[in-house]
Length: 437
Image (cartoon, rainbow, N blue to C red; front, side, top):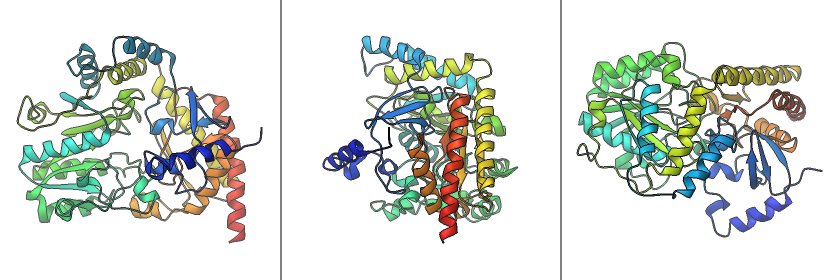
């Protein structure tokens, strides 16, 4: 069957009559790459299927949560049972405690954890907590790191903001933005200079230890250690935003890989098994400031709802009890990146491939990529050509040069080989574009 998105185009046109831009999250609109987004009808294992009948090997994975693959039978079975017991109670449940206990056992820096409904809600809440604990107002973030769409952190954000060319958003009051200080990622000297000037006013540094929202960017050796040392010296809190990297780059997240102990951590995605979830946690003396234990108010009608807790607990238990899971998924990700890199070189390209566990990314850039500015020098037009060529061959990547990709435990060797082969064809189209320039 020839590739077609006719039904999706009709559905997209109708959606735009009722939903701003036709989507409920901006990058889904394909505005950055052009064309029509496929409307997904179902998903299973490593595959998603659209309403036009196209089948794709999926490396979006609902933007990270589906580490086991879509509709994992053990997760869905537990969800069916949970639904029979009711979808929301607005009251304490045993399963909340079970999931919280597991998280605190796996992530040593987390002594207490509070569940919320999204990564944005987690980062928003954790900043209020950090300010209350330190009695300071200023926050430091890093250019190109995305921590959700709330006012304090929608300053030089990555992800969809970069894709759409809107690094900051109208509607963010200057008074709020003025308390957010921005430094380049991987620039320890710049962070040190900032603290030398304003360190006594800074409540916290929030950082993606492995940024995935300006494309996948890796920390330079020793960089995270320097960030930890600077914050400790000035009495500021270190917040790791591991909404994306948590339970992705390793079972204990990036902080396990880099052996860094932050004061507070934000989680999401994987801990909900594909259902809406977020969490923040950390040192007990800080977390006990959260109501009702302390005076810092935060609440949520659906926080810790039994469906998300069920899916999250089932997912984490499978990750914990599947022998060699992380070794295998990391090796598969490495094999895919190596194969794609070889295909690029066959076409004369030395593009940048980055990997952290089951996270990976491709920059259409032959220079080193280590921060927001170097990421932005990537050839977006070349990426767009590559993206559509892959989509037409049944390979589904995120529709943006500035998003990471995700391997799952459901991807097979056949999937990897098919992706590498398709990549070779796509790079040939990119080579044709360069030849015509």
